Length: 199
Image 1 (cartoon, rainbow, N blue to C red):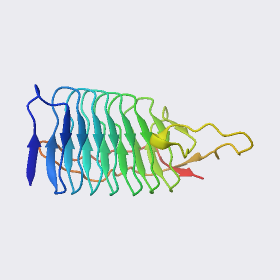
Image 2: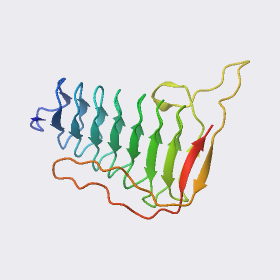
Image 3: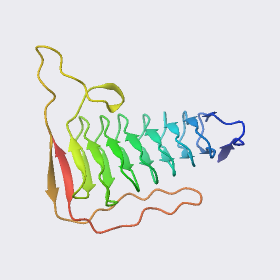
C-alpha cells in the first residue's frame, strides 16, 4: 500500500492516485483529493477539506474544524475532534462526527449516522432510508436537494421540502469496524435508542 505524505511547510493541496493508499495530511490547513482506490485519509490538525472521490474510503478528521465529503463508494467518515461537517455520497455511508458539535449530512444512499458523544449534533437525512444512533440533544432536519447538503429554499409555486421524522427504537448501537494505521476501531457502546429517518 502506498503512503502519501508531504512536509507541512509545503503542503496545502494533496492528491492521491487511482490506487488504494494511505494519505496523510499536515498540521496545517489542507485540501485533500483521495481520487480512486480504497483509501485511508488522515487529515490531522488544521481545518481540512477532504474529498473521498472514487473507491471505498475511510476519512479521518482531527482536532480542527474539518469538512469530509464521501465519494462514489461506500465510505466511512469520522470527524473525530473539532466541529466538523460530514457529507455522504450517493452510496451507503457511515458518518460519525466524533467529539464536539457536528453536522452530519446524508447522501442518496441508505446512510448510518452515529452521533452519541453527548453534544448537540445536527443530522440532515438524505433521500435514502437512513438510520441514526443519537443522543437526546441531537437535532434532525429535513431532507434537501441542494448541493453540498445546504438547505434549498422552495421556489415560488413549489411545495416545501417534505419533512422527515426520527423513529426511536430500543437496542444497542453497533458502529461498523473501520481500521487504519495508529487508529483503533470504534468501540461498541450502549445506546438509548436507534432512530430511523422516515420520509
